[in-house]
Every structure is written in structure tokens, then in C-alpha cells.
Image (cartoon, rainbow, N blue to C red; front, side, top):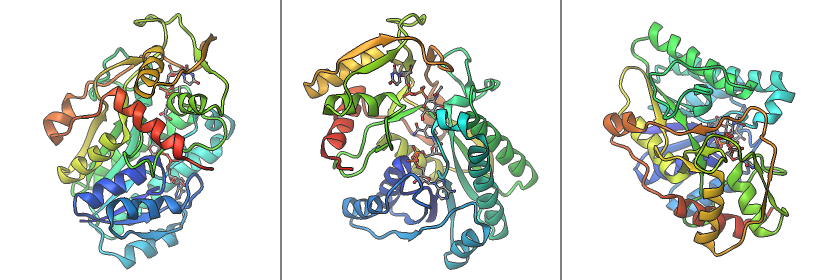
Length: 331
Ligand code: NAD
Ligand code: UD1
């Protein structure tokens, strides 16, 4: 299939380009590089020894997106493009709502105009809010604590309404849990701008000596050791989940959790990182971070049942691959 990957130069997008190319699909990327670099796509080409067509465009620009669709016969779209920093979204709600909602509307509108029926959307486990774990696709969604999370909940609702009105559309809403790790080549991975907000990049930068020590946000949650519990998923597994979603897509709207189904606490992750890589990660316990929940992990059985997909990598390989990338990465 010819697949348009919006946001394909980013962290999850670039790994998904690798998985798509390895599965024999052709890939066209549309990315404005607001949070990525074009040389990531050169690395994807090096890893796969295959070509990618790249458009440096903003996917909120309808005319630019239209040009891509008119240049290619597309079979489907994976829509990753979006802004994703939770804290920044609280400070810049207009930018977040505008970019994340308008990009989705523009891309799906042009899909309809060109009769491109397969559409895969990057959603997030954040839409479950503070539900009881494990999170199941049938649960009622609860409010998130920030505009970023709301853009995902709204994106899901928009696409659900579009699927209802256009029964020929095949839409997959993929709710990612906590993607970590990197391609085993060490060439592509997560390279956040500035001081990382997320746990794994923070741990890796402490290990590298770039940051002094990890601050563990709270050890008084009702979890195994009091620290937050998350469902960390290797980004390569997540990427393969997108190929499975595309390959098995059917008419209507379908929601899938992409997680491992296993919860790991912050301290457990720190210990796993230390053991996997033989490096100490100094940390201190500080206050809880506002907006955090105690536990978040998936019931991952629907994706297994309907897509034949399960995550294969364990936490140790996530730690090893994250570190290999961080060690080699030069700004
Ligand atoms: P990322 O920032 O690495 O990738 C997003 C890409 O989209 C970047 O390359 C950026 O330049 C591009 N982009 C943003 N706005 C654009 C626009 N208007 N036009 C064209 N390109 C644009 O982020 P990621 O971690 O790869 O996340 C991909 C998607 O998955 C996002 O929608 C994100 O919200 C979602 N998601 C991520 C996580 C996570 O933990 N990383 C969790 C849940 C959901
Ligand atoms: C966060 C976002 C979520 C988003 C995801 C990926 C919030 C409330 N949620 O998820 O919407 O989809 O990132 O971008 O922000 N931690 C520390 N020290 C750190 C960093 C994190 O102890 O320096 C802890 C957190 O308190 C949490 C766990 O590590 O318990 C994971 O945090 P993080 O990696 O930021 O992901 P989430 O909060 O799960």
C-alpha cells in the first residue's frame, strides 16, 4: 500500500516508517519539522535501504495537503502530526487546539475528497483519565488534566462522527501507553528539545551526565512501592502495532490500546535501567507532579484478538535501546 505518514520524521513516526517499509509498503512523509529533523528520514532510509518521499509541509495547510494527495495514489494515512508536550499545552492552549484539531480535520477532509478510506489516528491512554486499571477500550472516558489530552479526546470524537456519517471510512484510533526505547541500530530514537518532561529520556540524560539526578515525583501513591506505575512499550512494538492496524483495518471506527498490559513503577524502571546498562542513576524523591495519576496500564487483549498484535520487548530491552540511542546522540 501507499501510505501517507504525517509527522513521520518524529519519534514514533520514524519507527513506524521503518516498520511500514520493512513490511513492503511505500511511504510518503508530510512533516513541518517543528519537533524533528529531516536527517531522521535519511537514517530511516539507511536502516531499511528503501526510499521515502518527503514533503516539508504543515498539515494544517489544506492546499499543501491537497498537493500531496494529487501527486500520489494513496491507500491510507497514519496521522501522527501533532504537538505533544503536556506542560506546554497548558501555557499555549490555542497553539495545541489549533494544530492538533485543525491538522486532523484537514487531513481527514482531503481523505474524503480523494476517497482514501483507511485512517489511523495517534491517540493516547491519557483519554482514560483516572479510571481504574487496567484500562479497557469500552470504558467511559474521563476528563484529562490538560489541553493536550483534550485534543486527543476531541480528535477521537471527530473521527467517530465522521465514520458514522461515512460508513465507507475505516478508522483506527490507537491509544498509546508510554512509548520508550529506540531502534536497535541506535540511529533513531527520542530526542526531546530542552529538559525532558518524560521519564525515560530524563533517566537516559542523567545516565549520560547531562542532568544531575532524577526527581521521582511522589512515593506515596497506592502502588507497589509508592511511585507511579506506567505501561512502558517499546517504540518498535508500537510501530509494528500501526502496521497491524493498517493491515487489519475494516469499515467503521475501531479503538485499540497499544500497550504491554504490564505496569512498571518509576523505581522499578530506574532499577531495570541500572541493571540493563550497568550505570547508576542517582535520584531523589520530590513532591507529586500535578495532574499525574497513580497507575496507568492497558488491557491489551483487544489488539491481540483483532489485530494479532502483541508487544514483544521487555523493560530491559527498552532500557538498553534507549541508552544505546542516548549514548550515540549528538545535538
Ligand atoms: P514527535 O513530536 O516526535 O512527532 C510529531 C511529528 O509531527 C514531529 O516530527 C513534528 O515535526 C510533526 N508535526 C507537528 N505538527 C505538525 C504539523 N502541523 N504539520 C506537519 N508536521 C507536524 O511526537 P511522537 O512522540 O512521535 O508522537 C506522535 C504522535 O503520537 C503525536 O500525535 C502524539 O501526540 C501521539 N502520542 C505520543 C505519545 C508519546 O509518549 N510519545 C503518547 C501518546 C500519543
Ligand atoms: C505523560 C502525559 C501524557 C502523555 C505522555 C507522553 C501527563 C499527566 N501525562 O504521561 O498525556 O501522553 O506523557 O508524552 O503529563 N516521572 C518522574 N520524574 C520525571 C518524569 C516522570 O518521577 O522526571 C514519573 C511521573 O510522575 C509518572 C511516570 O514517571 O509517574 C511517567 O511519567 P511520564 O514519562 O511523564 O509519562 P506520563 O505522565 O505517564
